[in-house]
Length: 554
Image 1 (cartoon, one colour):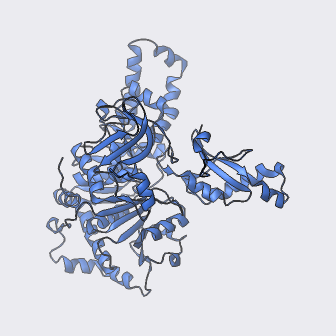
Image 2 (cartoon, rainbow, N blue to C red):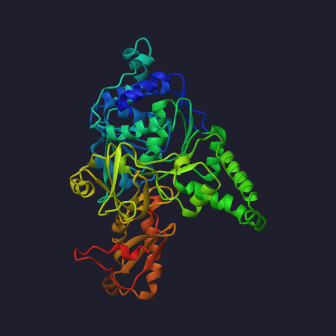
Image 3 (tube, rainbow, N blue to C red):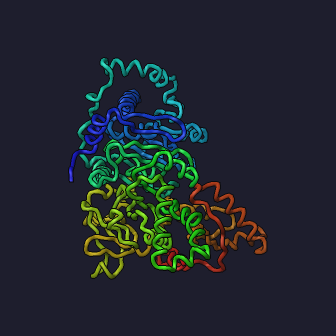
């Protein structure tokens, strides 16, 4: 596989695809060519220099998917600074913690998000830049120095590039691929945040695989609706497409099925990257009602006729998704077995990959024609897989461990977590249970780590929610578990506090409902607790007083 340096891949792509469309924002009419993107990156580099940003400095980026978001990310990468993407639906207090913990010196953010932040509590930030208006929202020291510079930015570009910025001016530094490029926080609350340190080589491993596999290609079309701040969307809806000359259409709004289908119909993407929730909603709302009609169920029992019906359903589904894609790649969370089985039965072109933020994210993938239902694809050529404590990895399940080009450098400022995740031989312990066939195909059987993957692919760390919940009135200890598609908090009440305050057990349910509402104000939307369930006895614990979580996950 071509080992061209990641930054040189982008320099080549921008020069070779100069006049092609690079980015559009769906519904806004905004479109940018690769030439436009390269010029904006060059202008942002001048802004970095004015702010005193040096190679290795951290740049925080928090906002919805947009052209300016992509500009800042790519400008940071090609400058040699470290990008710190923050999911825009993180609780503001948690986001501020991440920004401070990362040591970021500049923040790019949507105006509506910054309105709820306190600049005084971001002491390391020299300047806050608006993603909406390309203006300065705050700076240190005050005096509008940066604002005045921005007003002269066009003039500065003309002086720097007197003959105009051309393709020959695209020249990015040769930086060793072991250099830190991104810190991607897998969670967003104080005390449990883990910043995954991804190098240029980690990102490059994903990009080079995507290019070699022709997931995207010159002139292809893509609809980016997953959060670009998430490793999955970032790698395969942005980094790989920009490396080959794909036209990316950004969906900056909540990707409702109605909006997605409209975008697919207009853009006609050549590849669809999605989380299970999308296909599961289409199946449950559109397909299952059809196949469960008595008349259709009878016809599906007739050999030959059933194939015609399945073919018609498949063709209608393909057409609804734009009609011109090679395959749909599902990742970020397990795909519902019933949905997977049905899609395979009708011959729908989909495949399921496997990854995690710690691998930036890809670990395994197989093109849909060779995809084995129930699997998570084949381990990448640049990665190794082994099953811990298993003499027969194809039959005896154990923890899936991986190592290779994509494995992270470690967790930022958290050597203990790094040591727990990566052993002395370089194996990353994923926390997933499964088996692996001789050819490297991974079959995930379950998870024993505490992380919960929501249906839309977000990582949920229950300890973080519990830490907040345990500070609530009359909560002695708690455990957050997944029940179907819902988060349920198991709570052992603080009876001592209840006795002290003369609170009767009869009022507990009403009190806990108020606790739930207050808790949900402190967590991200995808971390919302749907129900609190009271338990009569303390949780069973290990000798170290840790709750035996596995006893409560069923």
